[in-house]
Length: 28
Image (cartoon, rainbow, N blue to C red; front, side):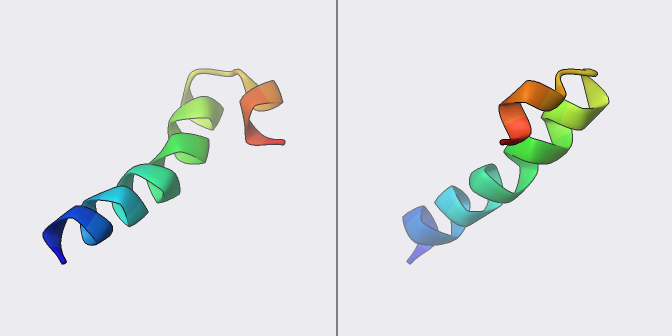
């Protein structure tokens, strides 16, 4: 359960970090 929750958090934060880094190409 913890692993699945952690994966969801990482997937949710990845596009957000891409926007913060100014690399919008990673969001597609």
